[in-house]
Length: 345
Image (cartoon, rainbow, N blue to C red; front, side, top):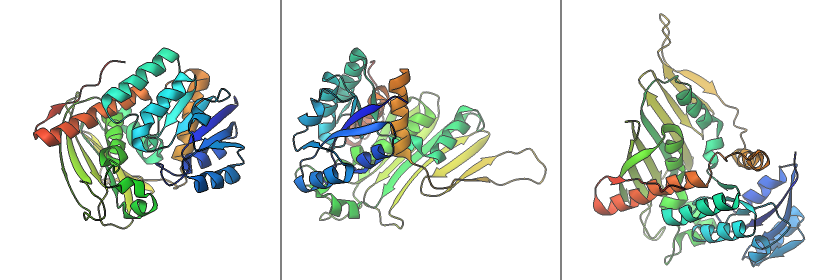
């Protein structure tokens, strides 16, 4: 395997996933973390010791402008992703960014076009594409086991109260994390991955949590029309009361079968017509629960660098996701179905 040198922006509480991406890179035998950046001095000092990194600074330019890195990981607050990925590309570095790629379609388009011009790879951390349960659903659809797909559903269902306590930036009253970016992009990405191009969406939103817990609406449902003629549904909530507190799901329904998957469970239901007398009901496919989607996401990205491939969720897909999200937000305002138009890259 080729050897890669990496830099990471974001290892503290004011990030999307704390030091998770840094921990992921330590599991990659061909990756060395060369430098780190985080605005929290305590978090940065702890990460420097934990990961044995000599170069570190509160200033992200220590990563973005370094001339000895092959790629960077952007793991900062949502509104900084596009700016920092763009700077990495300007410096000739490939980039992985947590979602969103930008805070609107135009930012995502700029990144995708710059990556194409510069011949560099950008991957968006849509890690549920690497969950074995959802890979199984995708495979069943692609190989035709379910027949003609007429509906695809996906959801990000998360009681975020403990996360809000641990990362207070998310519920900052002046600039809280946008639940559309923080949660809804995951199921949007999954339905596009499984169901294909979306042409129109209609969305509604409401509030599940108390005002003192989170300042803005935290729950949304989106209806989708696919180019194939299928329909879809996306559910995102940050304020639900449930145990366990975090679940995602992705289900596909066809005229010859159905497949139901939940990443929090180690089994997928496959319903199909077995054409065997006295045999019916679903087949339960077990999974061992030991998946490492972040590791697999990085491995896919590095393979694409080495072999000039396309990351499973690249910048172009990031644009398509943002086009659906922007249409959904507009639909909340208009109360109508809105077209989801992804510009050409």
